[in-house]
Image 1 (cartoon, helix red, strand yellow):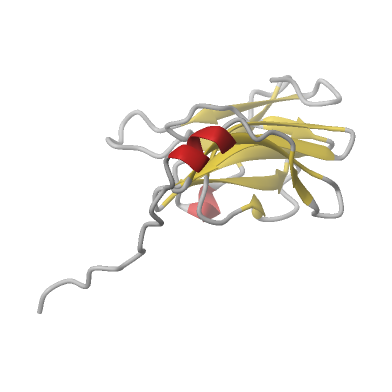
Image 2 (cartoon, rainbow, N blue to C red; image 1 turned 60 degrees about the vertical axis):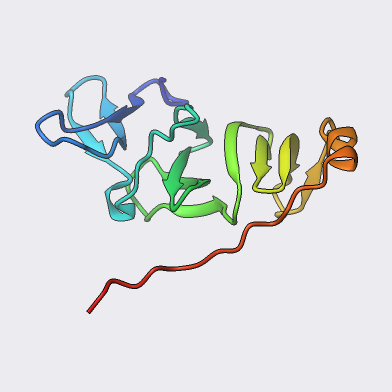
Length: 154
């Protein structure tokens, strides 16, 4: 996807020589062909199983990241002036998103809730816009999972 000024293209790329490989967010200069990886510091899969591609947010890119069973969303400056920073985290799976006019819209589910549509305003306020799963959850209450860590044997 072309950047706002048309001089760079954002994409996901992976090193096909490494299996399995993590896809990384890149920008490629359209004149020189020079490619820069923007997400390498995360050491995470930037092509989540839920799909998605990086989207432009002004001079930055917003993209999904798989992390311990969750799909979170990060933002990174396209000019490489900073490291990726979380935009949305927590225990949830984000399955789609877009940014327009300072508002970040996304669809997310949790271990106890079906997917719903949310918006996150520029000030960080999150609002749920739909309640499509309310009737189902009223009829079939979900049991909250318990997080645990297994330590390697001695």
